[in-house]
Image (cartoon, rainbow, N blue to C red):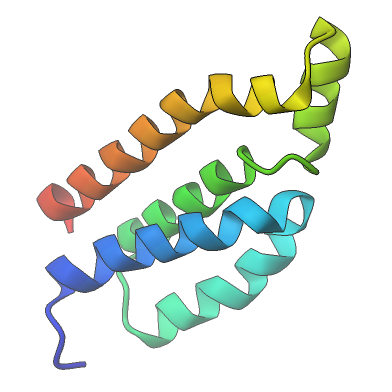
Length: 105
């Protein structure tokens, strides 16, 4: 309660992203654990949405995610190349979420 929200929300976004990467296809279950924590901390709906988006973006870097498997199979490329190709866009999306959290929350 004593920590300023302009520091807590970006940290929660990074934590959500870090949790989302290994979660992969289980990101929905992980959100069921993460979101009540944000609500208990008194996050605004916007802050909760930013954390949710960061967690979802993290799941897009997981090699066991079915989306990654489908892209790899469909385009006949190694799955690690799909992850590498996504990483610059995903990481820039997370950076944008962090910047937005400083501006909007």
